[in-house]
Image (cartoon, rainbow, N blue to C red; front, top):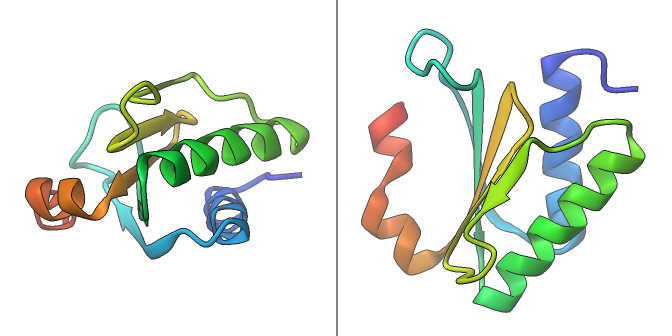
Length: 107
């Protein structure tokens, strides 16, 4: 179903939008990162919202035939990373997103 990188990113963004993820940002990091090709960053409104976004995304990707390689940060909820190989998804609360400025780091 998700045959291209573009389709996968579009599907991920759509599924994050299902639960009202805020400020989506997609960054191509080919040649800048050795672990992934694309980073998607979104903001969640609380640790509970971030956790729900991660869980929903993992479930929906599984339904589409894409397993995650794992996730980190689900126990705290201020910054959750979900690894889909060629796409790394960062779900962050506003304070963490402003503090780490991943968009500036990888753009």
